[in-house]
Image (cartoon, rainbow, N blue to C red; front, side, top):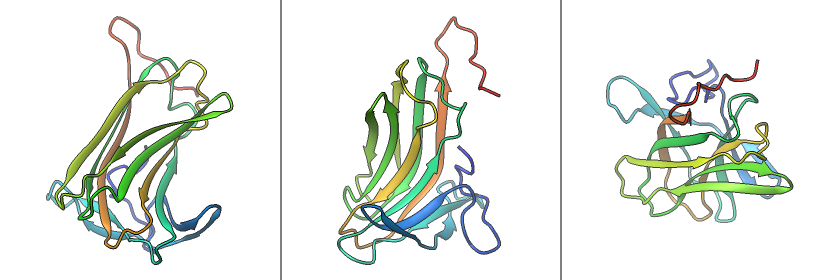
Length: 169
């Protein structure tokens, strides 16, 4: 992932390599992000995403994974630190295509008001389309307060005894 620790921001206040928007169905508009102190408390930054302005909308922070970064038949590990004061209103979702179907890996922030580690790992199917992987953090409809995200990591795990996979050029 690019800028997974949310340290790089443009001069206009937008977060580099991520898209933050609010809406419903296919009608989404960009919304501003806010830079806040990171989870590690050592002069790092995190991103704060706002709650939806109305009950019927979502707020989505998203990044499409660049082709060549995902290798089929390898184990994928995804993690992030998340902080939300509301139970189950912030979701980490990784979508990808296998044939005509969309597969989803999802983890939900429990809403303790403290930093929580969201993580998952799975084997990427041989038939997965490496160009279809998209990571999203979703503030669900009805959320009333903002949430924070930091230290997002996506790693390909190479099985023991096999040579390291090389990303496509």
